[in-house]
Length: 210
Image (cartoon, rainbow, N blue to C red):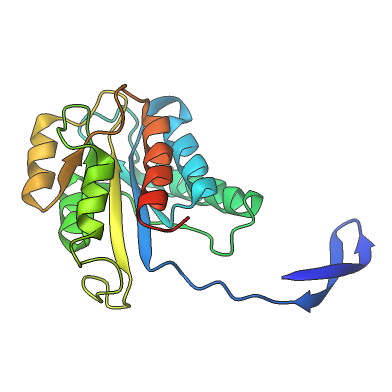
C-alpha cells in the first residue's frame, strides 16, 4: 500500500490510501526449524531469517539444547519469538508476517518432517551441498504447485538447524528415517544463529523465490 499522511498525533497516524497491491503467498514455503540455543542466538536466527524471507519458524527442543522451554516460560518465550519475528517482518516491509509455530521435541519434529514436501538437516558431516539437494528436488517435478502435502497447492521446505552443540547422531537417524535428508552448507562450520539465515538466502535463490 502507498498513501499520504493526512493527520498526525502523538499516538495516532492517519494515512489516505492511494494504491493497494496484493502479494500472493509463495508457491514454496520455507520453514526454519531452529533448535533452542543459549545467548539468544535462536532468536537472532529467527529475526534475521524473517528479514531474508522465511515463511514460518518452528522452535525445536533438541537433545543438546541447553535452553529449555517449560511451563509458563514456554508461553512467554513463544510470545517473545513471535514479537521478534513480527518486528523483523515490519522492518523488512514484508506483506506477510511469518508464523512462529508451537515448539516441538524430536518426536514432534519427526511428524513434521513426515508431512513436509522436503526436509533438510543442515549438517557439517553431510556429503551433498545444500544447492545440489535443492536443485535435485526442484527438478524432480515435485515442487512447486503439485498440491501434495499441504492441501493448498503450496510446497513446504523445512530447513533444520541444530543447537550450538550440534544435532546428535541419534536425532539425525530419527529425522532421516522420517524422510529428512542431510545437506552441507558451505565449507565452514556456522553458528546456530547464522546457518538458518544463510540457508534461507540460498534456498530463496535456487527455488526462484528471489
